Image 1 (spheres, one colour):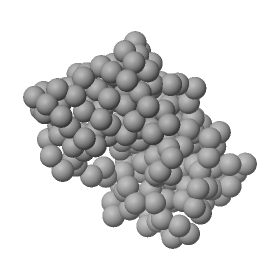
Image 2: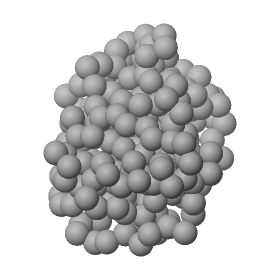
Image 3: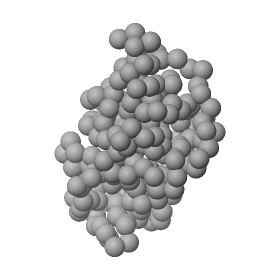
Length: 215
């Protein structure tokens, strides 16, 4: 598939084509046009489509039904549509085996993106700048000690003695199945408490799940 074909296929999916804007990554906007990107297709000159599996409670993150196995990479941009109508745009923060976690970078309106919406690789250039971490994160492997579903919290069996710091993100999984992401809020010597910021559809985090800072 050449660049022209890829562009036309992408443009046919939704009536609105939007572009990359590094200043908007991680900051959802409402009814604001996004500036087109000058970046052309490179290794991402292909059409990838999936659906929105879930929307995080903070309305800033989603889980997509396509992942590394489908060719998705960190930084890829997807536009979200419903019935041919543009609903928003997301940028992939982490590509898992068969799903991806992404941050919403533009929306048609508050809470516009919903479960079941169509996600299509953005035809404007696909790659969005992803802000670097404020601090380097080492690989730390952990296990889930307990879960408080009412408070949206999990406790992990690692703490400051293991190098954990407040703000670290852990990816939770069981076997080969990705369950979601948690962000550390409180750190003790040998355990920490983290808030669930992303949960994959039809999954429940549970005691004994594994967690890691780097997949």
